[in-house]
Image (tube, rainbow, N blue to C red; front, side):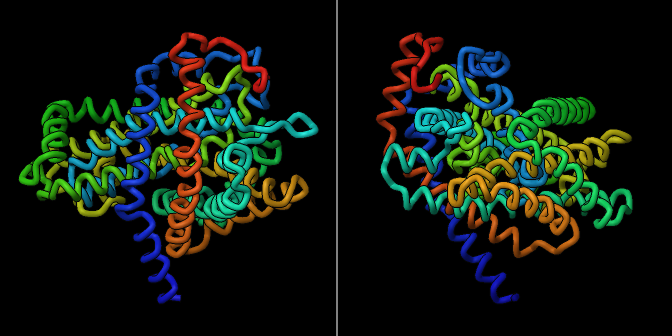
Length: 453
């Protein structure tokens, strides 16, 4: 088993090495340029995300689809993951994580566009879409669509289920001495109450949970930054300097190379916002929208909130905390996170606890839908009830088992998911440009596309 774990770790390291980072970041940059910087419309996209498109057809509102996507995207990686990037790449990693989010907006926009463009309506009126349908209908690559769904179904049980349940169980046990078995039972019951109602139930809960958890965490970070106000400007200077200067260090940090800052910052940004992974367009396809570009804009805000806002705030909290308290151990991600938040009397540990629990639980809900649609594509609707029951059981298993091996497998499957999705994005780039010019840059964003409605 140890040998197998070592092999899995090596495979994961290879899949998430420089070739994947270059492919993902290169796609972000390429789509940003050919689509004429859709990031310029981010504030219009935010406005669209909170307005129900009554003239469009779909299973859930645009906000419901976005909330479900954010539920799956904003997870423990936004807290512990950013700390890991800072621990390994230094303060400069925060800058590169942020930059990745800015350019990743174009990729998330593109994924949402293709999700609507190639979605299908079932006999009962349900909308289905995602990279598998773009691959099958847009490129006639059915075999690659099948591979994407296999990788998605496996990855969902890892990064979207068991490891999230495990994070909650460990935190509750360490903080409140609650048995993982008790936590597992409660989590399984809460998950069952939501996912057995399908995408509408998931979207409804996420539509309430995501704004609460995001606002609570952001306000908590602002409180910490207020307490650390004397060190915030110094932290910003250190983050920017460390991103471009190998000699920049100080404030309790040990100097790192530019390459290390870029590598870990970019990798964490890519992994955190899931732009290019292919997961978010699966739920984007269910949104009520009148044309592909409207939903594309709404989808793009997911990366903005996840990385440009939440990850950046987390990074600033961590760096300013280390400067304020040089005794903090910043060489280990989890330890850095816990130490940084615990330095703030009364509210620090509460913010961290509530943040991780709500982020992880919402990820379980969001990824349950992704995995469900992948399984449905592979075997039909008859498998859904079995899938949901297995998903609920996996939540309990994840709460009580050691999951070191699962992390490696999940990371590998996530990388393998991204490859066919990126192929679809690049090979269908002409479609992306055509639709974007037709609706966005011609000022016809309110027009209806007959294929959508």
